[in-house]
Length: 486
Image (tube, rainbow, N blue to C red; front, top):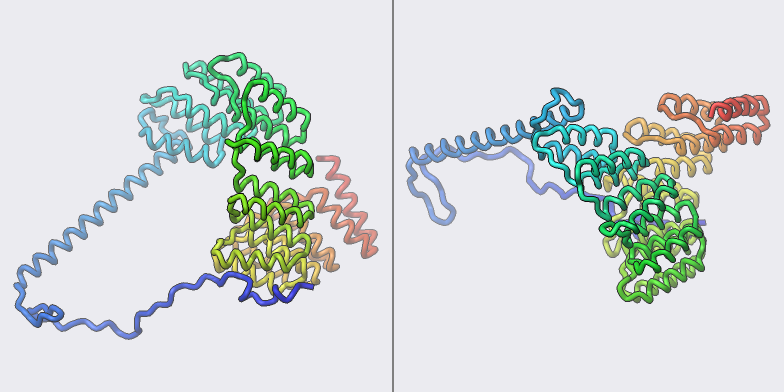
């Protein structure tokens, strides 16, 4: 049962966004009668030369016209720039005299959006320009982008091209390529490059190089390799910085290796130049809270606060999530009240956490209130939000409410994923709505989303529980054919 402290939305949640009332009185606008005199408040009436008044009005009209012309010219320039970007995208005209700023802006936009194929096309066109000069900074940004997109071969090609064009190789360039290899799991090549850096006087690895390698090893849980890297750092005389320690603490916490996490935190505290920050706080709270160690989480929160480390919105999201998953609704309510009192603006993650918590508690009224509130605050729901709603309605047997969620989706631009459809299949199966459950497959087909093993197994479970053996057999055959082709 949800405690009374969560029953009243007005005392717990921030108020919905209210537009300021329009204080202008209604009624027709009153225009003064035409006169040859101008009334000045408190000064009575005095004569004004109509010719001068007309001249001033004509001058103001001309200035307004000039402003409009200037605005139109500005818009024209913007449109021409956008047109040039379209030329860049399609490579029409093969111009070698494009404006530097336009090409560089187009390249930056694509790198930021991780559109690697388009970015490489723009870079190819950049190199064709008459004004082009090789610049290592652009190469490094492209190599980093390709690493994030798991395109190590392309990154290697750019690195070689960088050398051919005479760019001076630096620690930053080698580290970018090493990152591309390690992100894709090509550790042999990454470590080989590390050794190459050690033997290159101008490009010695630094703490940033090692931190990138450590992070990649931690992501695949290769903790032995992590210890080797830390020993190697020590032998090279390279000290860990705050980012290194935070990376280790976060990874150890997620892997539930609490002894190593605490040892790393203690070591960090011994280093005067490495001060814990909000990231350290959040990683520690997430580790203990995520494993249900609420008391330890609260003790850590108090210690970090006494050390002068202030919480941020991520901190409160972690606390809310931890309390919600352990059904500690009273403390969850207290966190929400604190956030409201000190004006912490709720994010999409905040709303998703509390909506899911109330949904799992069966408090549909509060859940729906929060869903309406997030829309009034112009926070756009995503698939996580919708999954929480569907799951709660499925457990409560509210099929008509799920139809309402689907209607909302039709009128929104939310991109649905396989997790949402599997959640929908599970909800319908839970309620015994087998026709609707099967219709989800057709819905998935229309949305261009293919069923996976979870989809079929969820349907088989629903049919089997209702002793609909023939239907369960049909889905098993579909699953068997899916496993053969995948």
